[in-house]
Length: 244
Image (cartoon, rainbow, N blue to C red; front, side):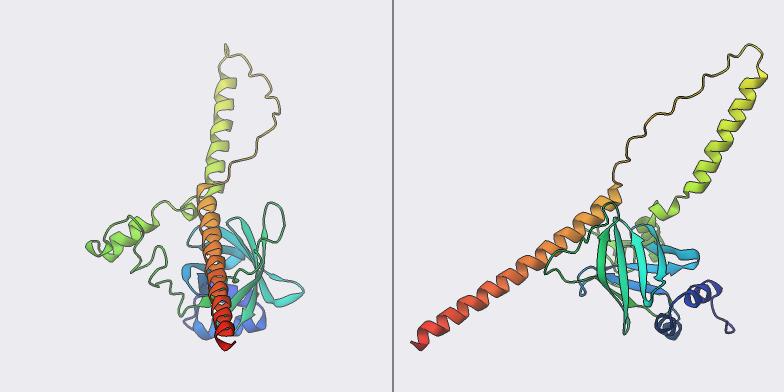
């Protein structure tokens, strides 16, 4: 590791394939602006040590494919994204639904891309949670200071929650309660809890919003392409009629 280099970033870069390493080292960054259609940048993702992934929307995981160092497997939201290296970032060549394992790209839909930033910057106009971004119905952000705007946009995201800490505290409480009940002579022993079938958890709201936003964007792209093709066919038909 070179002097002055961020140690966490160095750990991530050391875990990547050669071409990813060179790209991230040259830009001093493991952060990418995310584009669901390869054009409009709608968020950011950052590779963190230990295979952890942070995004605009939620936490996730990442790993380099064992049989192809040019591909990073990123899992977040409802999808698994196979991100292939390209100059200046990556392209999501394959995307699979985590619940079913099925390919989730629709035919004819542009593929998602990532564009590396410099120095792990996330600031980009139009990227949620960043300076210059104006969310629909949020009001004028220019009335807020940068710190206030950041605090408001980033308040109580999923990445602020730590399941291990929550589960550990709950386990400690259960153990303490059992000891207290055992020390009370008149307390009746609690019956052994029956193993009940746990119903599947509902899909988190942020995953629903992310999936619906991606589907809406995909449908809009397909509608625009269909309109363009129809217009081109109509123009060709007019030209043919005029030529007769």
